Image (cartoon, rainbow, N blue to C red; front, side, top):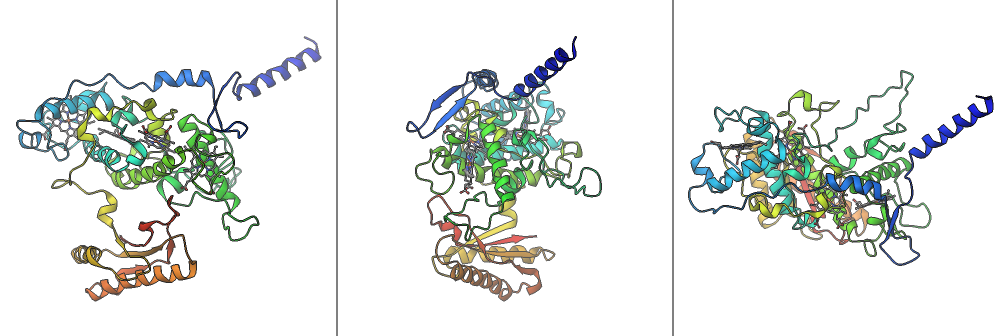
Length: 454
Ligand code: HEC
Ligand code: HEC
Ligand code: HEC
Ligand code: HEC
């Protein structure tokens, strides 16, 4: 081989390698807005062909039995969530969760088969919490999951550990060695479609509630305090949205206004907004609370529990399983009863009280004042605890007077606690916080004080 041929071969090989990273045409563009506005979603038929078989619902379950006759809660010893089901429907449910979560391992994955009432396997404890979580998603997050809803299969797909989970990245500073401090970016990470964007866009937005919105709303850069790095984090998250749903940015955003107004954007933007809040709740109230239940080998590099993101349910499809409505076959997963004895409430209810105020008012009234009585009782019963009080105000109106109001609300709550006999050093005040702008502009839940027990 001459030098030139060898060179050409090497160059060609390099080009082929480079192109392998791109999407091979032809692709199918689908128009989703007026002509000329660039409102198109581009699908790659080969990716779609791969996705379709992965997103098929499982075989339908047997028919629902009658719910008359003795209930599982009476017949069995240790049934806390599904106690209202008839024994036949309870067994149908057990057969279904086995097919959804542990078809290879069977009942023994969650049960000590010598004694089904025994809670000694962590998997059973987790599964019971997941039952509550699934009910909560279907009952209270309809703005996201609609009537389609979810079952265990939506995330698990026949595997005990769902294929799409995430852990907080290990951000140990490596300044002192050759790798340097990468600040969580510039390593092509799968979480952000192999780009150099920050590779953990989940912790700030899907666990914590850091603001995702970074655009200024003035022509000149005045008042907008978001940094370029914050914008990079937002883009990291958006890349995750696109890849999780198998869509482009235009599936949710109008090309003429990414951010800003909600009007004029596809309705999917609003669905996604609720989805972000739903995922935060699932992670904070259900998974974080299970941290100590999971064995060490199931935890992440920093000892945290596995968490959910958009891909956990969507797995590459615009709607999980292309919108197959499976939850309707399991009415027991569509609503939840008040937790029975011995069943812990969601983490937020146990450790956080939220007190709401009227417009412009800093006084607690009616039912809200009663919430304080409950709080005092809890604090008296647990003398080692402290509370942090955060006053929130709405994003609209005059900032200075809003902050003043939020501060007065927090002070009022503090004074009521100390008046009820709680020592002042057990009460810590946070600075006033602005509630996130809500879709409707004015948000009734913005006017609140949150009290967190620690
Ligand atoms: C993914 C975990 C999981 C699998 C797999 C599973 N179960 Fe269960 N099972 C549970 C949970 C959680 C409860 C408690 C439900 C509650 O509190 O409402 C339970 C409760 C029971 C009970 C009631 C026991 C008592 O006396 O309190 C029986 C019986 C039972 N399961 C049978 C089965 C059978 C049979 C299978 C296999 C076909 C099975 N389960 C598979 C999680 C599981
Ligand atoms: C929104 C997604 C989602 C849904 C819906 C869901 N799970 Fe899970 N499940 C998870 C995640 C995340 C984990 C943690 C993964 C791990 O175990 O490391 C998990 C773990 C589990 C485990 C422990 C498995 C192990 O080996 O560690 C069991 C058992 C389980 N789920 C049962 C259920 C049951 C039963 C349902 C339906 C009532 C359900 N899950 C619904 C996301 C989900
Ligand atoms: C599944 C729907 C969805 C997809 C796909 C999506 N976004 Fe978003 N995007 C949202 C939502 C919802 C928000 C607002 C989040 C909030 O307010 O909490 C947002 C916010 C943004 C913001 C911040 C806007 C502001 O006001 O500062 C930018 C920038 C953005 N997206 C860019 C993109 C880009 C670029 C893509 C494609 C890579 C993309 N988005 C894909 C739903 C989506
Ligand atoms: C617990 C499972 C689950 C999780 C997690 C989840 N989704 Fe969804 N999502 C659904 C279901 C179910 C639907 C279908 C609702 C329907 O039929 O209208 C849906 C629908 C959507 C839609 C509307 C699609 C359309 O064409 O109308 C968007 C957009 C969306 N999800 C975005 C997101 C984003 C962004 C995230 C992460 C922040 C997310 N989802 C996380 C279950 C989930």
